[in-house]
Length: 237
Length: 403
Image (cartoon, rainbow over all chains, first blue to last red):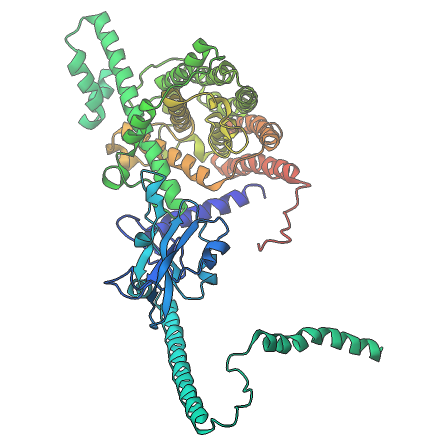
């Protein structure tokens, strides 16, 4: 009958009106400046640079100024200038560092591609969203001092991801150390071998690191496999 | 009203009149009348201005709660000062008059609209002794004054020299004139039964109780219930309230006839809308809900103006509730509802009330038959015309969305 739908609708709105007073599941508004919701771990807005040591943020930036993020950034909001000198990184290896690292967050579109492409876990997405300023130029162009935030901060805003990253970096460091130790042992063995068998020239041993040529050789059969399978089907038919 | 009846009332009932007489009692006769009129005008402006302010707040709070959010809660305790913040905002906004606009009409339209809607507040009996202007044909005056608001709407649309405003104003005019008809037709039965056009006479005709608990209000009769429903639906349309707020449908016509208005003139249009809503609700209370009469005999110790206020607020909350529930109609649906549904039902209601009037003398034993016949006269056309109205409009099948 005409009008029953209207009565049903009125009942729904009345239920919402009363429900908003006693049912917290319905009434979910947080009074923002006074109360805050806990942001989900994967919330992101603008990138920041991870530094390993809180006390010396500029000295311990993970960034090695490889400029991959600068090239990948779709709106091109990152500007990097490499340093002329080198500084030891967390593993003690000498690395270039960013002399200038600027992000224009008025241009940044929060796509996280810089984070995806960074091979050094040096750039991550931040949780900071209260960035309103009265000037649209300088305050929105962040330099490396403003961008650098310690690893402990990263742990605070997204514990799970930070733990994973730390575990991965530790494993890499351990692997590098083992590799270095193995290389040192091999070098020592080679040296002793060379000293022992100095008269006979050593045979051409395969290189530890695969050369580009061997990589290509390994990759080729894999690339040709689909063709060969297709040919196989054809011959069967 | 005689002095004897006046003396019988409680002091609370007499309070407003006593206060007025205290203020004006020392004046000579013609001056006293003028002073009393001025006081009535000031009180109406003050009371309904405040009601308007807090009604906007209540509307925003209730709409918010219905949508499961708190609504305005920043200005003052729980947002109680929000209307005043809004007023300051509106007053300090720039008042823009388009270069090609007709400046006189552009200025006059909101002023005329507010004054017309205020005029209609004059004849409503707010309490036993609180009738600002006791006209013998007050009902006629009321609808004449509220119908003049259509003129202002068209004035507003015309004056801005904006094609959207003009089109919207014509649409608004079509809506207002279409709904004027069921509105007036739903009032005719009340006038027929009461035998008077005077609002206080109509209230007096609804006095008394059956066995002390069932009031003689028009709404407890079949024709009165139907008339009340038609009146309220038409009042929604007359006051431009949702679901009939097409004249200012933001999503389709920039802001309708208000397109070229800003600042305080814009606020005046809103004020007029709320005044119209209050006036129409007050008239509905007077015509169908027994005016200022108490619902039960034992509750008469509560002063009459308090009963009027309670009923008025209940109807206004109903307006807000409906706004929160129903989506806006399309213009063709709106017109179809007026001409194919409301007008026939209002005309049939005249037959019902004629039958009710003629069968008033039936014996007590025949009373159930009288009620059954009157109810059938109301319900059967409603169902049949409603079925015709919705025939061919099968329930929508949602193929892709979950029901």
